[in-house]
Image (cartoon, rainbow, N blue to C red):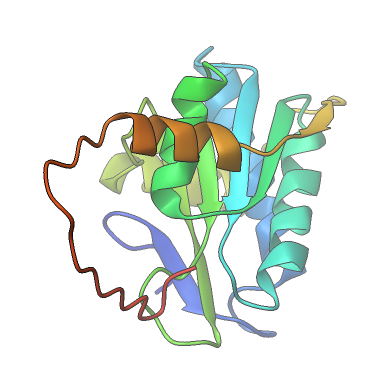
Length: 175
């Protein structure tokens, strides 16, 4: 049920998304990346929900246990995570988020390639690694870094206003 066509989402709690499942997801995703020799570094971020930092920390714990390195960018928007992949020149990223789902949900968007998410067969591979308990083992390094200012400068640097604007912002469920 949690594994969907384009991401993974579930209810936060004992049955679906919790620290234990996040550790397993981190191990499985990192194992996939390492075995395919895609990268040895993964950028990780999380959304605004109060439980997201602890779920992200568990995911990172799983990633580090495989020997993969992590750049933790903290709370961010999904587009900021994609930006961070380019900024830090790593093709892999993981966003701990339930996207537009209500509070009480969480999930993971797995970035596999610049601005691309892991789909169908890739998610099946992660599920199968978890079922087999078949993970790489090692000791990765953790780096914490903010990309907020670099992201802001990039966005603002691309905007050229020719007239004053009136702007209304409605953030919905977003960070």
